[in-house]
Length: 207
Image (cartoon, rainbow, N blue to C red; front, side):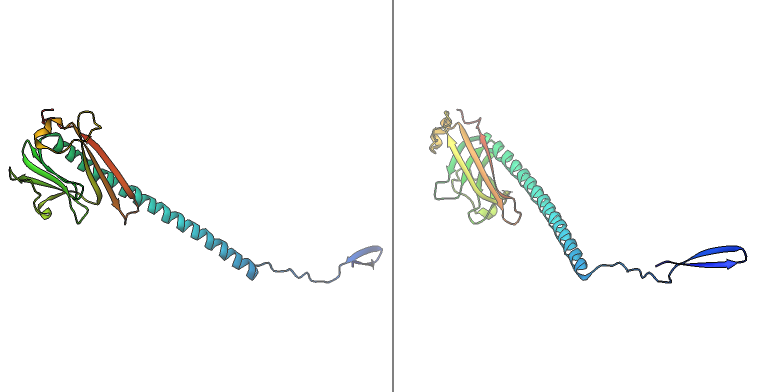
């Protein structure tokens, strides 16, 4: 409490206001242990979420890059197969349902073959085969056209595009189109299965 005291100094009267001599003890501010732990948990969650975002972004980039690379390889292979089959003059042999897909054909530049490696994931091309050869040479002798292939199919059709053409070298004129399907997959890339297809219409078979 404040006190009052009258002080006389001659004719001058001074009233002094006496303040009690007391000390204000300021309470120091700071963090409690609970606040520190809560802050650490929040920061840990933030860093975890940020890390997950970076990982997902990096994974998405890798998948996009691998997918584009796979599509580019497939496009190059399909373009080459299209050009090869477009120029065939006759077909010497084709695979049946019990064999890996292959075709042996006469090209304007000689007898050639395209086949899927039975024990691997490659489609290979064979050049300069004998003029009377109707069987595939050793697969190790072929040149790899494309890899990472899980399925390769060739379907042959007559002019109506619905009736299957039954292999017969003497009926090559009845062959109108060849449907080519290539299925690719890379388990280590995360891209998954990709299917690519094209239709080839031979122009030197006399049809």
